Amino acid sequence: MAGIFDGAVQNLIDAFSRLPSIGPKSAQRIVFYLLEQDEAEVKELADALLAVKEKVHFCEICGNVTEQKVCTICSDPRRSEETICVVEEAKDIVAIERTREYRGKYHVLGGSINPIRGIGPEDLRIRELLQRLQNGAVQEVILATDPNIEGEATAAYIIRLLSPIGIKISRLASGLPVGGDLEYADEITLSRAFEGRTKVAGFDAAPAQPATPEAATDPATPPNPPAAPAAETGPTANTNPPATPDGETSRAAHPNPPAAPKN
Image 1 (cartoon, rainbow, N blue to C red):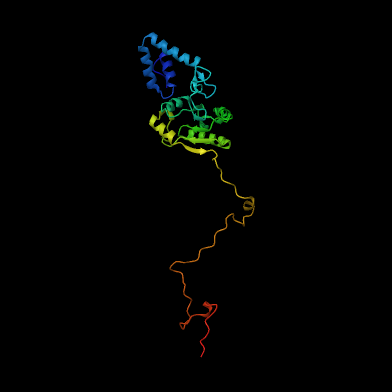
Image 2 (tube, one colour):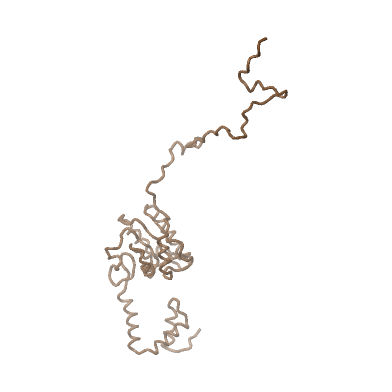
């Protein structure tokens, strides 16, 4: 559909319309708002947009946005090195930090697995996550991907990769709405999700002992043979010997019958 306006106005409306969650009507309102502002404010907005592309890049450790090589969270010595919270986007870190419940490090994947959009595991920062786990300092990985189809698929893929390593892997509790985005969750919901996170993989401290080789190779010999049934002692048990048709006691019921009286 052709635009109503010509030239620079319509070009700017089309540019804003391509932004997430902004439709043609919202883009038109933004453009006309900018037309009403003075040149200094519009120039400040333009400079801010250019500065984001020129100065901001991703942290070389976790993938968070920063103007330095390493973000403030990764460089903070007060943050725990034993826990890594895996999120899809850097904006999810802001939502979790608002809870003030988590004091570990983060790892930003840069998206989620979405075959429809052509995004596979190789397009995410999963390889960098595996590299961070090689030093043995991390004891737990918290999967905080969005509770939707793409987020669940991404979490399942990471669980399958990390399970052989033996570290604890947990998933945020189901207090988050299914199909929602993490960035829109409120602080109380996220706090409860962290408190109720469940373990999804990782070896226990005392693994169960395997069965003996004999029991594994000889199916006819069970490892623990069943015990013999106990004797019936209830009220239905028959403690009296069977009687013969004429009312006398059967000899078969007594292995040593009494001797006959002498005359």
